[in-house]
Length: 189
Image 1: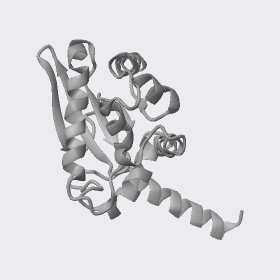
Image 2: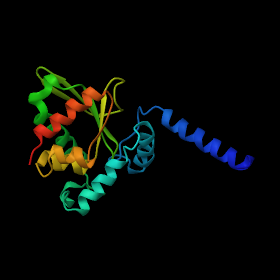
Image 3: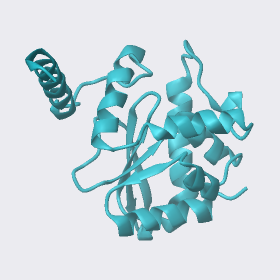
């Protein structure tokens, strides 16, 4: 590899690092600005290795008929954000009775790169939609809109989502296991 190629890879690598380290504050999610989501997904895959595999798992589940077209949002759907935030609140309701045992976590939906924080307390789970990203010690859950819709509607079990990669986890291994077990227990078909 000669000097021009080395320079090319060096500049490309530095550009990727700069993108990965830039602040997310003020960035729109893909529901508001579909063009912003592509670069944000690349950045997420750098920070959370293999997180893009969730989209591959979604495609596979659609091909197998597990996920249905009704689970997906469509371009130009003005109510997609409202429906998705409603599904996020429903997700919290469905795991609410396990709240005192759950760690605090943030969920990102890969398609729109929509972040939501879940704060479990003894009174239940507080949901903070449309946030800039996770807090420093948060467990991070990566999912996508169709998988979330299928989980809360009862069309997909938590165990299936865990086994097939419709959901991925990043953070403390003990906390990951608690959340994996909760999904398997609370979302049954």
